[in-house]
Length: 121
Length: 190
Image (cartoon, rainbow over all chains, first blue to last red; front, side, top):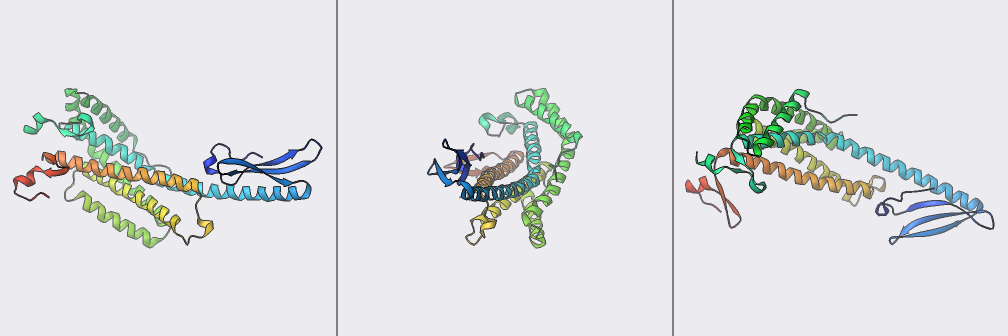
């Protein structure tokens, strides 16, 4: 079973679990973890023990997925509430620039200034 | 599910028109600048009114998210932003000052909301089931940083508009902003 592989920074626990088929027959349950920036494989066992641990890992994975989905939903809800800020910023930016230009200001090197000629007038 | 509020189509069209004229005026087109003055006079009050209206309605949505369904906190935040709005806009604000004030108030609200979220997560007594994962916190930290930057940008925009519209020239001396009119009136400058 493939876990999250794309960003190791976010993965602190099980990232890869699965059954290994041995040459002499039978399956062996293993799992890999990130330990000090490296992948360390942990050999759990065969038969009933392997199955119990695999089931336990599966439940833990589901629990984490549910929890992540809950937090993601909360963040999305907040982002939706704040989405209007982009529209507001755009309107304010366009109107500010238009007003200052119409009033005779200019922006040399990014700093708004009143044009010298207009200022004297 | 609530979606991001949008400006009415008519206002968006006018905004596009103002943006196009501003681009030309900034490039030195004198005719575009003349047209920009006219277009601003005709359309900016409506665009400002619409945008301010959207901002106020959306602030309420953000407040209910921030208050976490606590009516007391909700009322307190509403009263607080009402006071802030009056204080920042001052007496007889221009339409543009009103709009920039709404932007500052909204951005402040978001910064406060994110600060509160982070503070809760840093509380040592937080039960483990309420502890957010690191990916969530990283997202909130990045968002908090950009919201603070945008808040300062909004404050700076209002200050720039006020300084340039007042027609008072300013100067910088030893990294201190000096208001020239205050010097002329004989006021002390610290």
